[in-house]
Length: 327
Image (cartoon, rainbow, N blue to C red; front, side, top):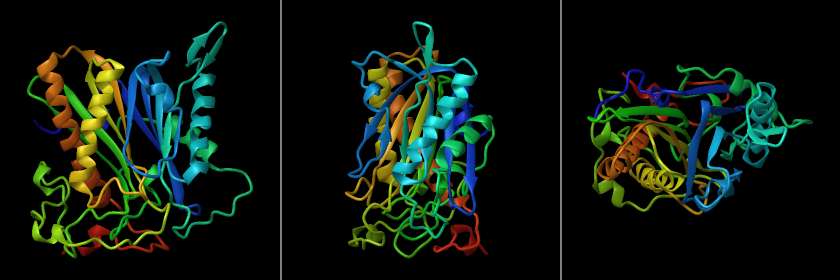
């Protein structure tokens, strides 16, 4: 397994990502856009999720493909980012055809960043506009760290952010991850700067500062966030051809990536969620599907660490930036 050319989820051919954020609001939205509709599924393991259109991602539902997936800040307000994406897609003629009508299918998930110091005293919900702006900005290359849905994110200790990574398997299949990290748990071991995800790092992609101390992981964590202030939301994508049921299994496996990179994970206060996306460009057999689950977990762990590693300082930060500790 090796990094893809960009080490981004867009190493999966046919996918693009756009970010939009508002510095005064201290929040933003991120959109994963397919050149054509793609198969999607979801796994939810956090105790406080916020979602839109996730019920239709079950394998027994009528609609098997989506046009885009949305990750957003803003708690429940942020779900309106999906409406902005729908507006933009409809304007281009995209969407599920029902008679003469077209309905863009845009599931989404949110994280809570309403208490991060930004100006949340809006009159009209700003997330619809952020969603459309993110969709219209979608490209193969995009900014990590303090950007999009991760713009106002925080964790137990460090400033959070938006992360991505990719892996190419020996058989040529690509797996990519996109994640907004706003966790109640910590991405580093104890008081150190060593990432829990360190065993999975490739090519010093998040600083290569060494492995964490296992003993530190035995400590009982303290709750540094209040109820509703957390959540890690992610997308795991591949060019392998998967049914919706197979994509869901990949999303479930990817949840291990959250648990490896954040301690604790999947808490009562987090809305931890993983979408899965399959563009269907490569046929895979059963043994290769087995490898997809492993690659999904590894790639998501790396993306989580990169989110914190790539975060940058902004006026009004209430948490330290990981990179500020570099010599």
